[in-house]
Amino acid sequence: MTSMHNEKPEDTEVVQHNDLRQYKLFLYHKLLLMLETDVPLYFLDRSDLWETVKPYNFHYVPKSDVPLHNLQRSYHSVRLRSLRPLVPILTLDKQGFEVERLDTRMQYEDFRDEQLIDDVYFSELEDHFTKKLGAKKIRPLDFQLRLRDREFPYFEGKPSAKPQPSLMTHVDVTPEATKSIIRELYEDTAEEILKGRYQIITVWRPLRVPVRDWPLALCDASTVSLSDMVENDVIYPNYVAENLMIHYSERQRWYWLPDQAEDEVLVFKAVDSDKNKYNRMSPSQELCRIAERADLA
Image 1 (cartoon, rainbow, N blue to C red):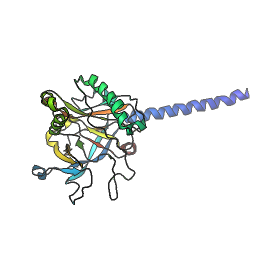
Image 2 (cartoon, one colour):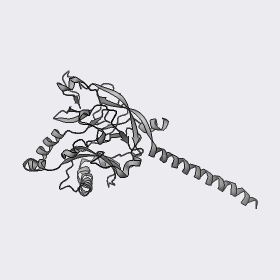
Image 3 (cartoon, rainbow, N blue to C red):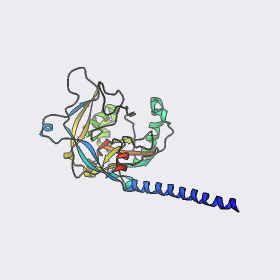
Image 4 (cartoon, rainbow, N blue to C red):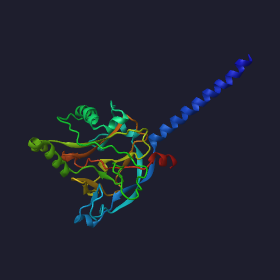
């Protein structure tokens, strides 16, 4: 009898402990669904300068004394909302982004292997988006593995040689630059392609999860006007790309995906040739440890 009496409180204690843990997890995930917090994002200043001077920034250190950029920029506090409650209703053609469940055969270390990226990962993306979009042709354009340096964003001296999180709100590529890309890739069939509908879409996948260090912020494209965007030259050692820098507007609505999981990819649109969806381009910027700041807010 004594032994039975001693076991009962212990069992009850374990049950209570487990219930409490489950309840805390429930509340935490409930918080993620409703989470809103104010964060600072970098925007290009509105200025008459951009009527005569084009913004630019170097993605390497030139040998000359040319300034690395001419961007006039400021922080603005924006209300950041959780994507979790909206996932079922998001569309590329309205908000400009979606959250997709997309498994991969790739392991963490495989993403350093260019051949595996070409043979396995790109093939997975082609299969998935050909079906999803009903496209005649899907062609991967680029792959970038971002490995944040410990010093980022406060480098002393020469900046990192590895791609780092972006600190400016932007759209990855412009409509005119897209036409040049298509002409370069498709040559003889380019003009025929340009007569139809074409899009450039970015797929953002986390490799270390859950994502709490420099997650991605996305702006609802339906809240961005053409006057909010300015063409910008992105200068590399061997070529010049063109993207869009973003002006701040109170009308814009910004979002993030709390605790993004390994099989959750953010899919967002940079360019769409459909004139009815011209402004359905979703600006983005990476965020510094937003999950921790949000928990404390």
